[in-house]
Image (cartoon, rainbow, N blue to C red):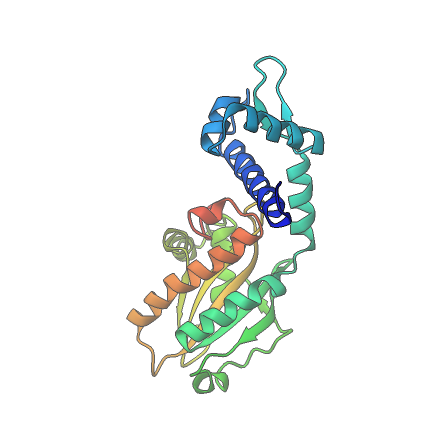
Length: 258
């Protein structure tokens, strides 16, 4: 006789197998679906067990069976549920833990800017251990509106959005292309004297820029070479946030052209 613990373990195993089956089907987006034996091998079940599992997923509305070949495919319910989840996500709430981790790793100030029309708004800021050295130089406050074309964060957004120039400005066009190539922008005391900034765009599920992650460092203490290294960390952090919002471009880097 199976104990209560044994039953719970069996249910847990079935749930995990169901998740693995769904992930496998999703990774094989074929118009005719995926065959039973392929799914069974992928989730380490015999054909009978896999068939019962898939039948339960069909009954629950997550999977359907294609009539002609009797292959399996996901239903639109996954898009419905994931879309609802993404719509309820707030950028500040999602980004805050990543910002704290980045501020701790670098010791410097991390800011989050959200895209609002043709401007950016500073939504949140996290300070690292050396933040006191740069705070008094960073005059922007949470809630301030910033320009897209005159700030490092704005240029990161323009690059991620596919803009190539402004009024035919070849210098800006070249700069945006460089941002796209490396995935982040570096501002060497252009926007704020004595402050070097790295910025990388955050994308949504349609691969459109919805915000920017920025790292501010004191120019007297941090070299351009070190800022370049920080740029990779900022890009990785922005990519992590973009993935949480369903961006497919985040796989290749947050500032890739949509």
